[in-house]
Length: 462
Ligand code: UDX
Ligand code: ADP
Image (cartoon, rainbow, N blue to C red; front, top):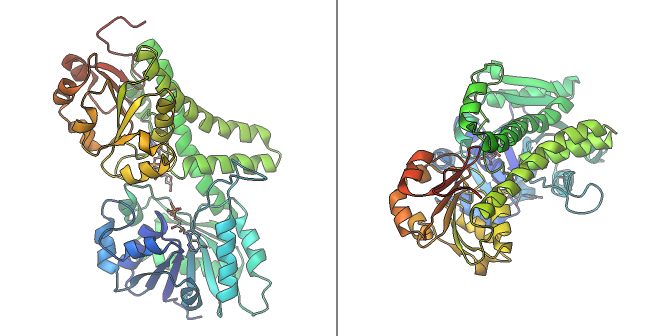
């Protein structure tokens, strides 16, 4: 192997693999970066201007490097053979069957990838764990890859990705830290240094944190668990605010001004979604349980339970406000993505809320600037009985209620007087993200229910 590897391969062209490799290629013209995937349609889309994921700033980065030193391909075997460094960024969903179902990570895609690498390789390689994996996965990988009769050596490095969707490009270009873990042996440290060398092309050295491989694997799960815990903590307090006339935004601001607490991730919401938080916490819970640490497991599981409570509570408050029935009532859902600036809907609270309202026989219209295609797939069993309308004004025509589920900035600047005029009266607005001025909506005539605030209604609360 040459001292500075020139060929980087990424297996998995998803929300993590695609943007990460685009940034590496754009920042490091000296490397040839190839991204492969078993999903041929996805690869084809990466080769066009209509990228398979919506991410602000991504297309500029892709255009800068594509066909220069960034390539997308379905030739997995050929590219494994050529590569010096292989990032593995395949999906690791929660297991839905057998031992650990509902909690542990389903590593079948990972294991298949490891076996593909073993089968195809003809030279030494560094294998980088990019997907979030349970702590000690590297040990399992080593067992698959090490005892090979080809005399080939694989070094395993953990380099978890901390990008958040919607801000992925900035997160990749200006990360708080890059974490790179390896075995502490001379070989392990040398492999780790090769990955450090990639990032030092644009990340200041003091932001690159190196550690042992288990710390790196575990830190990714713990970072997500801590972030989600803040949201569940503030959401638990939002329920109390609604009863006590405290205002959650004021409480968040007041506590966030304490520099020991900090201001971020304190926005009460209809619940957190996304592909990582729930999955990673349940994974942490499963790992703790498997070591017999039941109190630890229970402590973290509560973060997920509080999130589910928040989703249920939102639907309950809608039902109660709408005179305990939504049957036959038109409800416009503003936002289906799990957060703003992405079309991703994985684990979006909107999925649960839509299904609950559907069970209650509401007449649902879903609006979202980017996520309608994914919404249709998430709801494929009931898709014919729900409407989808990109234009929020059309979605709200004749509706009894609007529920804001995603904090898209478009929804902050809508003409709410116009929306109100076109709606059925009394008109209700449920703000699941606290993005609209309650007093203003109330003045227009809406009955307003914002997370973490007492209702503002034109009639006595029952
Ligand atoms: C998260 C982590 O932030 C990232 O570091 C990791 O790599 C992957 O998981 P992501 O899921 O893309 O990223 O988005 P994030 O911004 O963390 O939001 C997750 C969910 O929490 C969203 O549904 C968001 O709306 C919600 N959220 C976030 C809140 O409800 N309140 C907040 O204050 C912040
Ligand atoms: P993430 O958000 O972690 O990037 P995604 O689901 O968006 O997750 O992306 C994972 C990608 O990995 C998918 O595009 C999937 O097709 C791909 N993938 C899964 N298994 C394999 C495999 N064995 N070889 C190549 N690609 C794979």
